[in-house]
Image 1 (cartoon, one colour):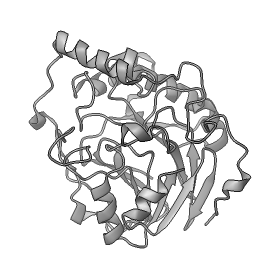
Image 2: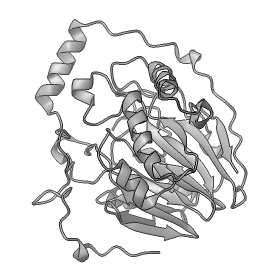
Image 3: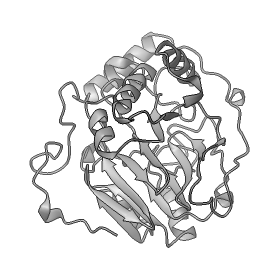
Length: 338
């Protein structure tokens, strides 16, 4: 495994002077607590559009391979939100695993699952790799980390800078931290930590102390891009040029309203179309499939929970893109690329 040497860093633009991290691009300014209070006030004044009943979301029986798929097959199973089980390169990979009932520091308050985790924890195949995008509660769950570390002590964990201590404190043993553009590898699978536009912090006093990121994951037969939790940013083209072409991209399409508040941290479907267009500049004729993430699981923002896929399909079709290459998956659904 590639070792990380902090002394070799130069002080990249996304590192804050004095410690911590930032989004280095124009129009990436984050909103503060005063803006949050403005949002709360607006929500009280303006009635929100209703959400669907939880029962309206179809849950599929997962069809991943136990214990592992053959190395030349890629399967993807949507657990919910940005939690996915991947099978590629003969390994089982979890992305942003989250099995708790609430995305919160406590389980009696905070955003509650609209749809339960669509893969039973005890039904998981043996996990070889766990990939973390950042430290927010809906992506990094303490209870899930502890359960995975106990059940699969030999698993390799990959996370952006500063997140490793959280994982180790909860029992993870093989932990690799990476900065943007740094690589790591295990058992024939190569991972690259790539830029995302977001923020971090599990408490107000520790905002942006740890890094946020996307990841690319490459096996001998497949190459996958996981965008993380992100707004639209200028680096999608560079990610594609340096790490592509990709077979599959997992990109967020939900948690986007109101735009004045969420636009700097979350993509909406129209932003996602732009990101796909930028990634496609390096595809060299290779077809790219998009798996939509970050919707339909936790009520985090103002749009109805079932709106993102409707808008995504409309935007995809309006862009003249192949509808078979847009995967709006059901919770628990497994899809395959040969």
